[in-house]
Length: 255
Image (tube, rainbow, N blue to C red; front, side, top):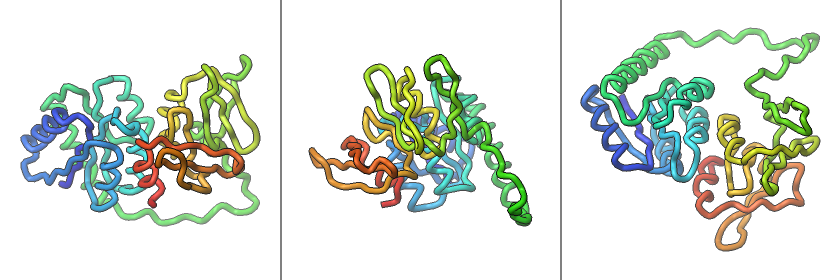
């Protein structure tokens, strides 16, 4: 089995690698110390299993997991975290499993065994036969609940279709959510949106901006040897990219 261990803390990486090799000596293991390095790694070679730390130094582990799902759709993904609340988040994101820090050898072994089993089952299963496409007479399917986000606007709960969100910016102690049709202001931290929206193709390009990668129309040089982007429908707005985010953004966009 080919495994990638992704963690920005070297002692954690080495401890997990040691436990993996103890349980599965024939494993081939690569490691990465950041989200951007991990993207380079998984884009250059295939992996069966990824262990992803939830709190990387340059991006959320949830953002990396979402990107990894697109790059390696058949790989198993396991969150490594010191926070038990991410156990639920792992399954919400479609991640296959999780392990808690400090690592327990029995737990690591069980997770490895389950991932091996699931990979073998996946390889043994025949490819699904495509069914007939939707007819013109059929009504459009509603947006699934997982693709919607509830926000509180003037004591009213508004359900937003996540694909309609173009970008979110900070404004004092609140955030402005820019959608394709209108803007909303909510008293919420940008970091909370970052965690919620990472699986849906959003990336925090700057301490003040969280963008939907699918709406980026331009990227160009900006001040201090950094970059800036423009978003579809908001071409008059220039959103700066933090210098520490440039490499990860380029990799997420495949450029």
